[in-house]
Image (tube, rainbow, N blue to C red; front, side, top):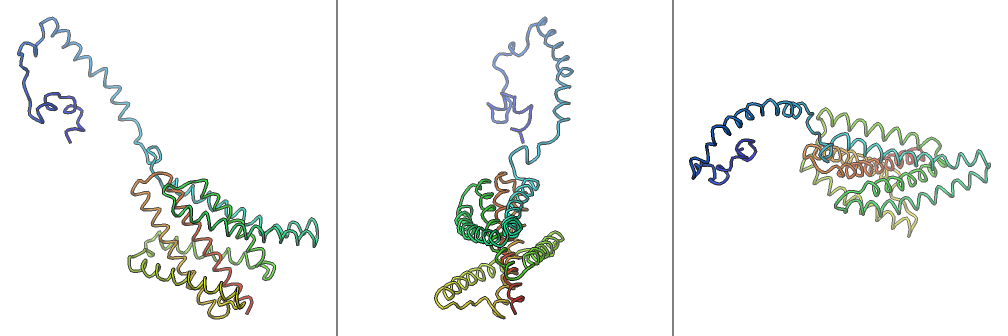
Length: 300
């Protein structure tokens, strides 16, 4: 406490004597002449009055917030999340409605051109999004530009994928959006009231289930390329899709806890983009899984 104290911090005797007062060697040097003493006494009497306004102004100043000190606040996290999801949603809607818009302008040829563009955007979006997802995941310091670039690519990919599904099952994209909003809102409300929380055991189960899910996806892709068989159909597809939605919901809880821990720990403000990236990845995954579940139900 002493080194934070204004008086003790300026006391040379305490600084030199390590907390024990050391008297001056020259007794007379401690007491100035009478005239000088009177003048210094008058100055000392005037000093408090002169310093009082400065002290009052210092006390009147508002306390520095986390935003002023460069630490992440809840506002920073919400701004980053809003910007990232906003880019994904806007581009997704644009590419999803592009075939319809070009169809209105150019008829059937314009609609076909729109589908070709959206398919190209879907391929580029998924491949580029995967690359940027790996970069953002392993990058030490989060980058707002890279996170927004990932959001743009995912928006193009989701828009193209949704347009393809809309061509086969009209209205399915809106149903998937409503389903994603319903699940995400439910998770958020239950998290805010303290019902949903992570635990070490559940997190380990989630990690094992995630590895198994990724292996299943790789095997399914291999079978589709070699034999044309899709394991994500029928009852098995519904079960895998439901489990994936549950896993995405738990991942969303983990993302919310990351935001809370970051704000409480006072981490650097750039960490808000890492939180926004995690929530965007989870919601994109959830939307795709709900879209596939609806396609299976509509197909049957």
